[in-house]
Image (cartoon, rainbow, N blue to C red; front, top):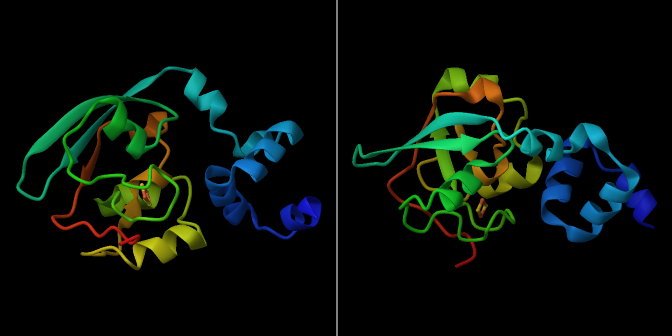
Length: 158
Ligand code: FES
């Protein structure tokens, strides 16, 4: 049954499923789906600069590890962004909504998957360059990334 399930998922959906479903994630680890793994990136321990710009103009500049998600960056650096990442990256809240500059948005290695798009639809202040921070994995190319955090967040679970 699991084999049939995996077979019918597109690569994009599989990536979202791997992030949010321990059963398929464990299965994937055993099957060594290397192209989807971010483990290799995380082990490199390279750093990039990331700046979160809050609605009031306050800038939270930080260093982040390549392979971490933007949610990891907020949590690991204890950034004071109220309510950010309420569902801890399980794609059920949309509180990690961020707005990227068009060039940065177009350079992202992965497009939003269907589950992310569904969650984005519930976010306040949605723009053409909106993404969910828990779904953006940092690469070396993203050094200097600047992200806007909208004023109002919506926790889709409430
Ligand atoms: S942290 Fe909840 S959707 Fe990203």
